Image 1 (cartoon, one colour):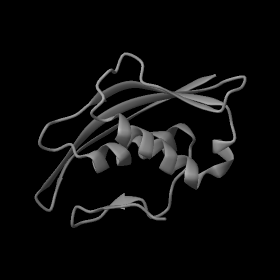
Image 2 (image 1 turned 90 degrees about the horizontal axis):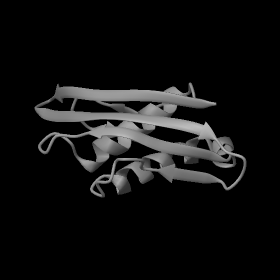
Image 3 (image 1 turned 180 degrees about the vertical axis):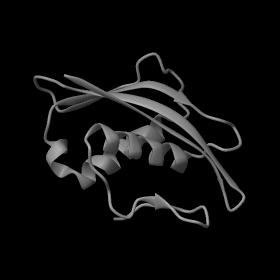
Image 4 (image 1 turned 30 degrees about the vertical axis):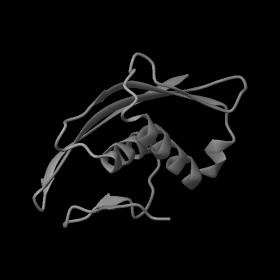
Length: 119
């Protein structure tokens, strides 16, 4: 069964702009561990951030890292000025949290515009 989620972040916090719009699907596979499929999204600019976001999420939900799943990036929209690598990491993690109906406590953007990633 395939599960999909979309996460959009369009905010101005403490004079810092944040913009990203990402859509991800996850489906179980028969075998082979975790596969990341960038689909029609061919830009290499953000792949490192997406990979890091997936790794970070799985590190906090270890039981999922032992599953055989395919994570597919369906869409990613960015803006030159307001999209930083850390914003794409954050959006990827939040999208996966929604798909798996879970949270990472302490993961937030604070009122100073800092993205906080708990260990």
